[in-house]
Image (cartoon, rainbow, N blue to C red; front, side):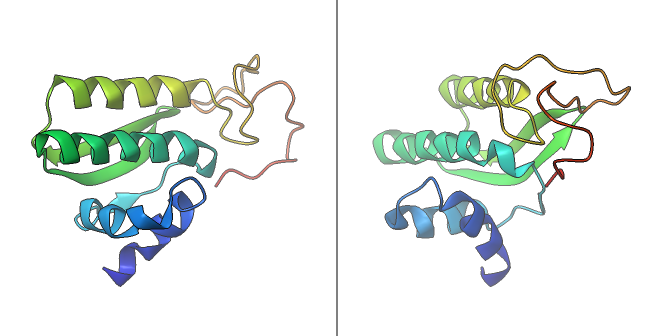
Length: 131
């Protein structure tokens, strides 16, 4: 699980230490974790919902891929996914579509760059690097 420590390092800013083992476990089969860091808070909130679902209903979820596709979050899982978890994932994808991947601002007007990823109008060209 050492190779998945980087996922914990990113999400630990928004999760308590007691979630570390859970994060390492559900991401143990994740072969691609490459979303923008500006979206980590939303992903951490989704992890909290998955944790609660596991505790209350015994749902076993494995995260297999988390990435940006066509400028939006894509969060793919295997396991005991129900309608509640599907809705939570969909909501996280919608939330991330409103967060500028360059600076992390929320609901700012977007400038058309001719690409799928659009920076907000507050971002100066070249001022922010995508992560």
